[in-house]
Image (cartoon, rainbow, N blue to C red; front, side, top):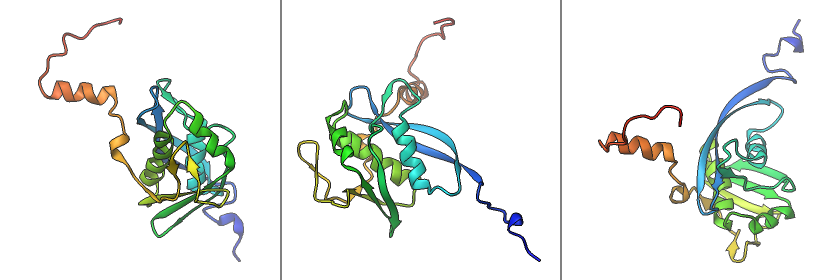
Length: 175
């Protein structure tokens, strides 16, 4: 005599995910990694959660959001290591923002590739891939992860300097 109440994953179940998100630096010419832990409903696919987190923008005030609130995810699918992302027309307006079009694109591509088992991302605007983003960037794709556009954060550079024996001076209290 089974009951749906004993189902370990119920309708209102939640789970945690630790996400790697990429946002634009203040100059708009590189992307910077930000880690985030999220609590989300099991009714929501992780791809959608990731894109919602990107739209919410960074926690770090030295980073900039790459997607505005008008951008809507119409569909997102992962098949054969390719993530197909279908966005509304408002996505094309994000190319007029602070960040370069490549920065906007690769913040999404690198975020999706780092969090999913995807090797590449195929963009669509309302079902169409034959679209130009910014002035000249074709979305025909697919786009592979690009580590060259990632900015190494200051804390990492400081650790590298101290590891190589560079004297950073005495620690200062109260600065």
